[in-house]
Length: 187
Image 1 (cartoon, rainbow, N blue to C red):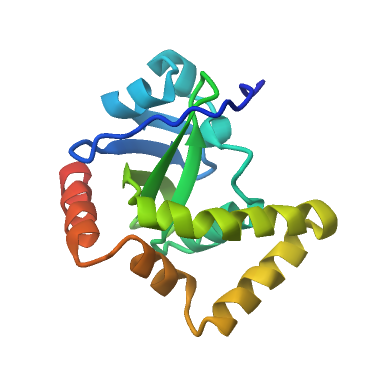
Image 2 (image 1 turned 90 degrees about the vertical axis):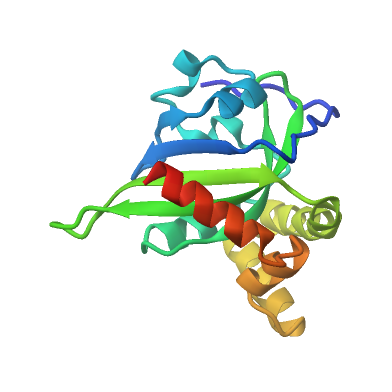
């Protein structure tokens, strides 16, 4: 699967619309709502059955995805600010929260549903320098070095990743209300 070449063109998302996608436990897309299909620039047929990394932007540090997968594979939710890439190479910023679906009999994760809204500009502005630093460290020392830096950054700032993201997205409860409503719609 070839990825598009990134271009410096931001797709501005509607604050009134949301992106939803569902993957199997391994991250293979099983469903995408109309807005996901529209924004990604891929047809539904091009998305279904492909790894969700099809929309991964190279400006995103791998350590962020490692942290997300570590959490969701334990059945834990996580909210993240993510830069995605459309088929055209354009990019778009989202706040994403994941909802794992767990088989009640085997207690194994069978799917993940991701709910996304447009990321606030203040959150984007705050994560860009952090993500650039993490990418530089990953290029020189690998993901392990990047993960150590991120842990140190959070410790120095007396925060956790969740607190950092909640503060960046201005979590006055609006995002929680949105994500709670979306989860009810899709459960």
